Image 1 (cartoon, rainbow, N blue to C red):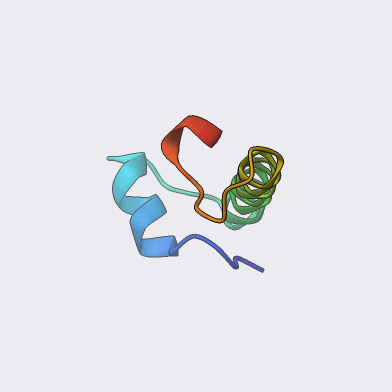
Image 2: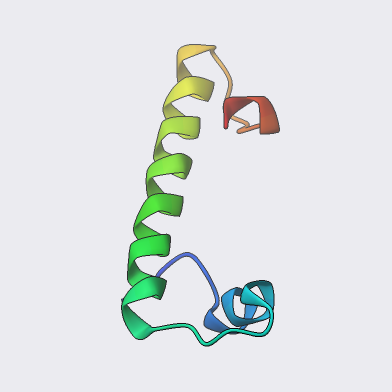
Length: 55
């Protein structure tokens, strides 16, 4: 199940190729991992705001 990303946005970004249904879940999982790591980094630096540098 895709939780973070919008399927239409992924399709638009894929530009001229079809997107398999399993791709959405795999990509969404990776994005969630990035978000989780960024949140942890922000917390480690004493911030409640996640910034681009946390990615």
